[in-house]
Length: 397
Image (cartoon, rainbow, N blue to C red; front, side):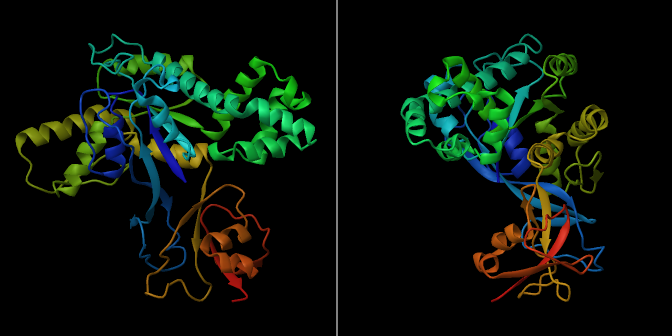
């Protein structure tokens, strides 16, 4: 799974990325500070199962604090997009292609209205951030339309000539941008396009298909950034009313980055997603003032910085992923003695057999049964797994 961080230039996108990952990236106040995509790992919170099983976990990747497991998620930060990106403006096509593997998108928007449509600084509140929501959706829709148009005429004729299954044929054509047979089936039913021959689809039909395909294969939330600035709150309320179909998370990426860096420097004790922090180091007066400002104007008002909420909303609300722990009824350790070392994020509807293949192809190919470690009940290969299940796979090898 990969979550893409998108938006126009100079809205705090790289700050948001760094606040998630603490990766060493360039943060600059000018367009195209990012050219090559930055990749790193964020972490989402899952209630650990160790206490239920009477052990203390020792994660192989991620970490666990006070019974909360932080599970890694890959994120990618592409360069800021500009109007006309789908036509190649601002190296837009290259940046859009970097997003093709993303399962979900977080659109970082300067909710304080301090950057214009070109990503240039303007006086706070003088630019309408709702324009950015419209602009990015349009660019993504046009990108999808270009991908579809490139192959459509030849593809549609071939499907009709060979009397191929429409849903399956479309799925195979667009797997590269995340299409699945289930998604295509839902789209065709919703739009009634499945009732038309592909060769009879109009230009408007193809545009509708492109938009729906983008919505289903690149679900998106809005990270309403710069909420620490005075002009942001009124804009947020207005944008929420204008786009009621979108999930909008108030965020202050700069505040989250400050807190994480202070925690790393052992000046404070801070757990991502918390609504407060504990001073533990020697803070000078300027540092105290900055941290007090964050507490009062961000953590207290937003219930946290919003950054952790945003990544978790993408993983658990948009994608509806579940967390599964591999383990054994009689043994919860691996060969190196680590206890419950792994926690995997899996797609909704994952079965015991799917999970076996996730662990190793041999486990899947030689699957005999699975055991629900919590209940100690044996389950079959088609058994659907639930969030926070602990599963033992029994195979023939």
